[in-house]
Length: 107
Image (tube, rainbow, N blue to C red; front, side, top):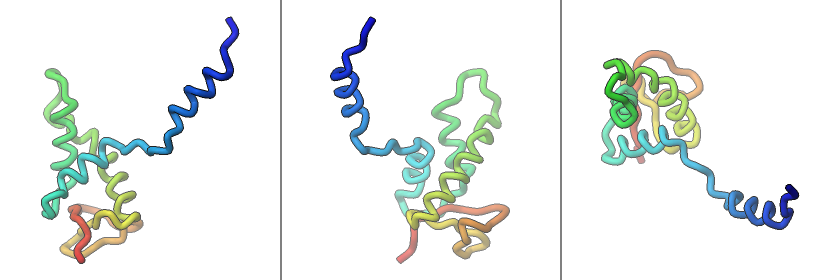
């Protein structure tokens, strides 16, 4: 079977609409922050787990999402879209350890 090259080009142009897909974890982070409060990353991970859990999922299923939340939080903080708060101060997204919270940037 020979593929029609024009059909392939048409499909490629439909797929290349230059709209980057937003990571669902980013959506959860931004939704959690929309009211302006500081939010713990484990609350975001728990929200993701609630939406994705199956009836037989363990209670600590949310922990599976903690790394993804941290990675996306760092990415958003580097872009200036959120702030990472550690001990009440804005932390460097490239160099922080331990417990932290997330918030929208303060003006």
